[in-house]
Image (cartoon, rainbow, N blue to C red; front, side, top):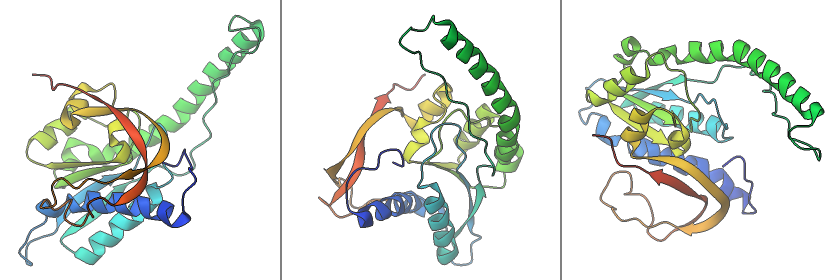
Length: 239
C-alpha cells in the first residue's frame, strides 16, 4: 500500500500493517505445539523484493519478531533485502517525435547498458541473501512466510522449495506474496491465484464468514477499514 497514500486518518494508516501481520501470525497457530515443553517451531520470514517494495515491510519484520519473542512457541529468522541497493535506471519514455526518434533510440540504448550494469551489480547480492531457501537449509524450518515479497525471486531451487512445502511443511503468504513468481506456474498453482492489479484505496467492510477459524476469531464482523481493492487472476490448478 506504500504507493497509494489515500486520504484517511493517520491512525488507521498505522494500524493496517499491524493488522495484516497479525492475521498472518494467527495462521501460524496450527503450527505451534500446545505442550509447553515442545520445541518452538521455526519460521523463516522472507522480505526480499525484486519488484515494488512496500513501505510496511519494516513494520512487518518488527511485529513478527516481537510476537515470536512474546509468544515463545515459535521463533523467526529473517531473509532481508541486502542493504545499499543502488537506484535502478528508469526506462525512457518517447517524446513528441515518437519511438523512432533517434534521440529516444539513443536513450533506450543507454538504458539497456545501465540496466545491465545494475543487474550485474545487484542480482548477485539478492541471490546470496536467498541462499537461505536452499533445500538443505529449509530442512531446519517448519514454515516459510513471504511478507510482501514481489517479483521473480532468484531462489537456489524454486522447484525444490515447492517440493519442501508439499512434503508437509507450511507456507504463509502475506499481502503481495501473490505478486511474486508470476512466471513460475507451480508457485501460482500452490496459491490458487495471482495478483493482477488494484485501484485506489477505499473504505471496505470486513465480512467474517468463519469466526471459528483461528485466523478470523479476533476479527470484528462488519468492521470498516481502508484498503485497496485488489484484482487477482484466479486459475485452475494444473493436473
